[in-house]
View 1 (spheres, rainbow, N blue to C red):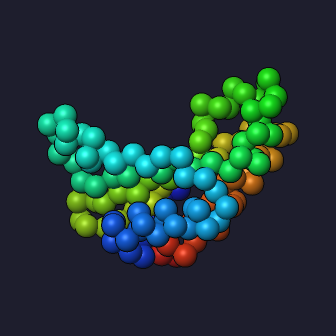
View 2: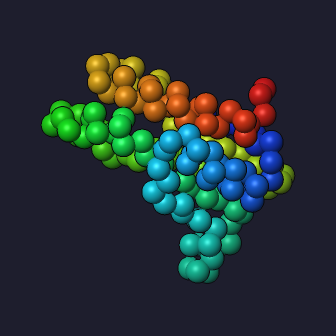
Length: 130
């Protein structure tokens, strides 16, 4: 249900390149959550983790304009996580929305499948092929 890849770059460069690639790919970057910083402020220490909330309005509107599909708004916006492991490896993870959406078919499969496919193209230059 989730996809995880090693990044070609360190944590900081991966986060910056992802930020730029999302915008260059025609998506909106709604927020970046720095979980390490957030938890540090609460007295906890974790390795670097940033969660990017991204959206493609022309896709999301197809589901949000319909009563029956609005149920899936809890999966919106799309999220991509960049994090560092204890071995110093930078990883990129995200929900495989295309696989999940196949169960529902119709407009849900169409929109979530397209969103996943487009995001994979954006991420492709950042990840190490296995």
